[in-house]
Image 1 (cartoon, rainbow, N blue to C red):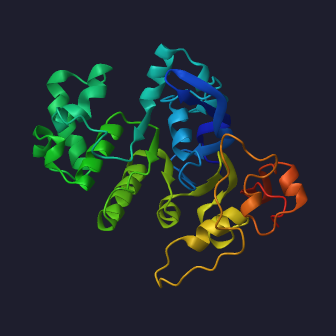
Image 2: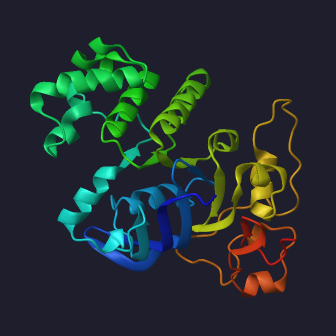
Length: 325
């Protein structure tokens, strides 16, 4: 049975001008995203993983137009209208079914508002609930995320980091969204709390059928939560496959490197091949060919000369590498 597609992304591209000083800008541009394409099924999770600065957060924020991409297409809930081309009023209406859970559970909450107001502010603003019902609505969603009803009358500073992230989740799901961007929602939390938040997200997905783009740099977290995983490097997706398939059979040299350096329970040191411990290329002057070529132990002249396309090497397994078998 084919899974219904909630989000389809085609050739998402974003670059930024470099500030030259004062109020002027340089002609150089940072190429944050380059032709990023993927889709997410209803009730499914796509994990997006990669090093810091690879474009993960830019991808998430571009999808909801928190930042405006340079070009690309985003189709939501089977619509044939490009979400990125909608005028502001229509965009805001459509975005009610899309939500964002930010990485920092403290800075994303208004410290001057009570939790009940934080949770119900958006549905009140858009006329989705009545003001006289707001307190009961907030208590209902606090219960869903595992917080007591009296939390509605408290302020964010009265809660721990994990509890504040539960409040963020409640604020997102009160809108009954079909799609949520989870931008490293557990990276700032203690390990003991991370599993609780991950299981909460899974429970919500099972109950409401919500789809997630789950952004993280921790591979074990991504494999635990995701149905599919996309690996990003220097603004491009270099490998994408079902979670178990990617875990058992990574094909791209960069994916293999990520898995090699991931923390191991036994704590044994990792032995890298020559060149793998290099730096990500400058996003203002990307190389002519494969961005990973200078760190890759199997790179050839073809790799340095041409950009490898993201192609299918096996059923549901795509790799952007000339050498992938």
